[in-house]
Length: 327
Image: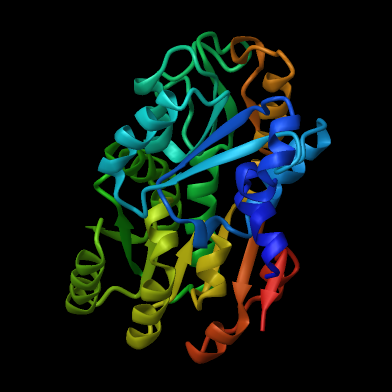
């Protein structure tokens, strides 16, 4: 990546503009971006946020700046990071995932918050309703229940011989864990699969979880939707390959790293929608009046090379529905 492109991506207008030029410019609004993951994970996805902002007239580094805060999977750091963004008096906080949204909500009742969530924000108590959020938060929601159940069904279709499936969840986000396990129930009943629930919130615990899978002879692995697992995608894909375990997740990055398949919301498009809402708020719209948008773009990705290594044949009916095949 060229230096100029990198500067534009991280959004530091103070870095991109000479001091003399800054003195001649009116103060530009600053967006606070709060994430439980890392820049390395989101660097490509952030083009969606930039595109959304551009659609409503904001160019990062020209007339808007972004202050990034990454917790690198350490969810307990998010409250302090949110408080820091509030002290900096950012104009809007963009929150990725549950933990960041809750941290932002706890830190401020006045600064607008635009979230991207898998769970229902009404049930989480973040908004009064989808059509009239009220308060200082609104954003983008994708229907996790349908996606979670569908992902297990797709895994069963791709690996029909697997009868025992390990489900790995992150106990650091108890709400998301409970939601994943609840949403899996319909698909478990339909497929007749036996589920082994394992927990991991650190790299060491991922290692221990795989040891348990081998010990219990799990025949496939289903990852709960959690940014931590996406940040540990290389470790997960490597362990899965080492033990010959088909791996299904919600994040295409995990399939790209060597996982068997992914099915989930198109996060780049979700970030684009976030960018549009942030731009509208910067122009004067109130989050209380902006309905929570339902994400409608989903993608199925299959890693054909991993399938071949595992000795699996992708059914033609599944290939007809796939959005991308990784060779």
